[in-house]
Length: 191
Ligand code: SME
Image 1 (cartoon, protein in one colour):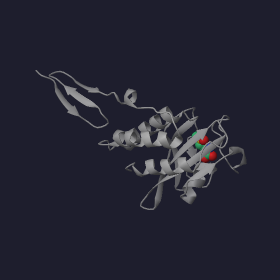
Image 2 (cartoon, protein in one colour):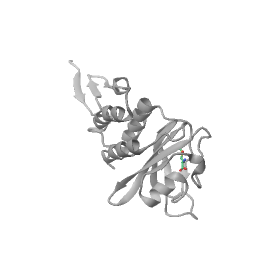
Image 3 (cartoon, rainbow, N blue to C red):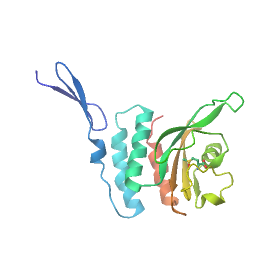
């Protein structure tokens, strides 16, 4: 039998013959990493991220690939997502942030609304750039190596549904360019 080939999003191909079906995926090695200004790096990465998301409805798979792509391009200390989910402890509020797909050192699993940079970004529904984490009151230090941070909320139907968090080992690492492009990337995520 001639194997049947079907494309299934993200550049993957499903190869089926009489006995077996195999996914042939080559995305990670196909990510084109560029040097240049921050703007040039984002400009190169955005169409690639759009390609990664195309045809794939699973939110966890998509957030995982975005975290992977950003880590490969920028090599930040930590990059990942916290998702707004039902709270675990009965005494706490209804909802809290729960750790989602990420790249980097292990991180705190749950963050309450208004706590740390992530919880503040959720509460205010605004991007927060922290040039020096030691000067942010209530900053939650998941890694002692983190020096600066940016948190971008993902807003759908006027509600924050998740936040993207990036940490750097350098002070003053994130700026308006990161805000503009990371917000743009977050608009492409279908929740
Ligand atoms: N620093 C964050 C906590 C998450 S970690 O950095 C991965 C905060 O203050 O909310």
